[in-house]
Structure formats: C-alpha cells, structure tokens
Amino acid sequence: MNTPQKPSSFAKIGLNIQDLREKIPESIKIVAVSKTRTRAEILEAYENGLTDFGENYLQEAIPKIESLSNYPLVWHFIGAIQANKTAEIAKYFSWVHAISREKIARRLNEARASTLAPLNVCLQINISEETSKSGLAPDLKSILKLATLIEQMPRLRLRGLMAIPHEETQEHQARLTFKKLSTLFHDLQKEGFELDTLSMGMSEDFKWAIAEGSTCVRLGTAIFGPRN
Ligand SMILES: *Cc1c(COP(=O)(O)O)cnc(C)c1O
Image 1 (tube, rainbow, N blue to C red):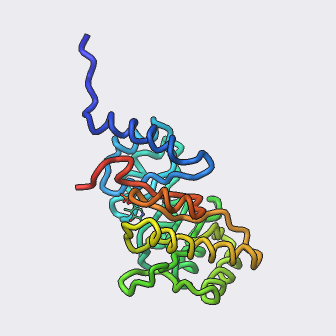
Image 2: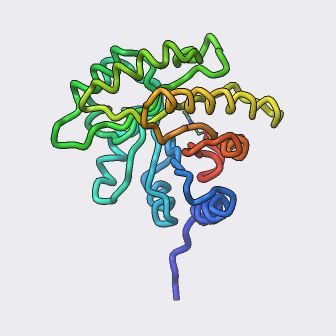
Image 3: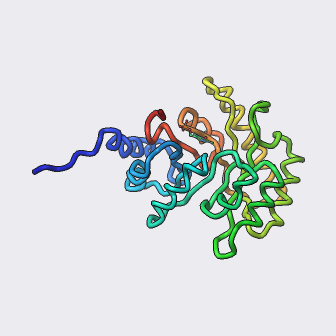
C-alpha cells in the first residue's frame, strides 16, 4: 500500500500538542499563534484538538480565516491595531487582545455587526514599561478609566488583561513581572469588573505565567516549531 506520508513537521505538531496538554491544565485556554503558518498547519493543530488561533497581521490572516470558515475555529487578533483596520478586525475576529486606546475601542465597537456576538477584548498593559512597546502603563487609575469606557460599549465585551513582557531568562524576574499583571487583574475584579481572562505566557515562559495565574497562553513556536 502506498500511504501518503505527512511531512515530519506535521507529525511534530501533534506530538507538541500532546506534550503541552500534559503540562497545561485543562482550565487554561491555549491560543495557537498561527502567524506565518499555513492553512494546512492550522488544520493539523485543529485535528489535534486546538480550536483557538491567534494572528498578528490582518492581510495574512484574512485569506486563512476565509479558507477555514467551514471549521469551528475561534480567531484572536493579537497584534498591534491600526485605526484603519478596525472594521476588518471586527468582521473577522472573535477576540482582540491588544487594546490600549479609547479611539481603537470606539472604532471596533462601531464596526462590530449586530448579527455577531459582542467582540471579546483585553487591554494590553505595558507591564515591563518598555518605551518601544505599546500598551497602557501598569497604573490602576488609567486602566480603570479605559475599562470603564469599554464597559459602556455594547458591541464590546471586556474580558481581561494581556501583556507581552520583556523576555526574561530568569524565573524569578519573569514571575515578578507576571505577578504585577496578575495583581492589576485582581484589582480590577475588586472594582467590580467581571473579568475571566489573563492573557500572558508564550512558548518560552508559559510555565511561569501559569504559576502566576495566567488563564490564557499564546503559543506559537511550542506548537508549530521555529518560525522562518
Ligand atoms: C508571536 C506571538 C506569540 C507567540 O510567540 P512564541 O514565542 O512563538 O510562542 C504570542 N503572543 C504574541 C502577541 C505574539 O506576537
């Protein structure tokens, strides 16, 4: 018999997911970061049980989302958001992780069709306070201000906080940073916001993020292998 062989990189995706499943509790959402990955790689991850996929670049994402529209996939926009892209983001995605400006939130709210469920959003916090990175300063007052405005937008549903911390190789330092985001998340909950999503942790540091309370890890390399 001549059984077609899958390329080895594909076999690896299934094994990687099995391995991650053993390390990551069931209650934690895995967003498979599929930027630069093909439709076939995404399908392989889906067939191995993943349903949530994250994309950073709209032009790259749209053809993939359209070509996979027959599958029950949940798409997360995890990249930086340009104001002129909000209509398309509101059309194609269920989640937006990196909101840090009122203007962007307003435009997404206006663009989200009433035939779709409200768009799930997280506020991006510049937790390492790097000048090069976008996100709100890790200051409760400014976070509360934007969170309060978003709560009044009917087509958005505020779900939580997200951060892309400065890469740390030391567990102690990485965990301190994740703990800072976790504390802000709990402070917002104490202020009455019903949040359930703490989006932190990537391939290199997800274990430490989970130890500090992450509910949603965004994994690219750990699932699909190194990016070109
Ligand atoms: C690329 C990317 C990831 C995934 O990175 P890996 O190190 O490959 O896991 C997660 N979050 C964001 C915002 C990204 O841009």
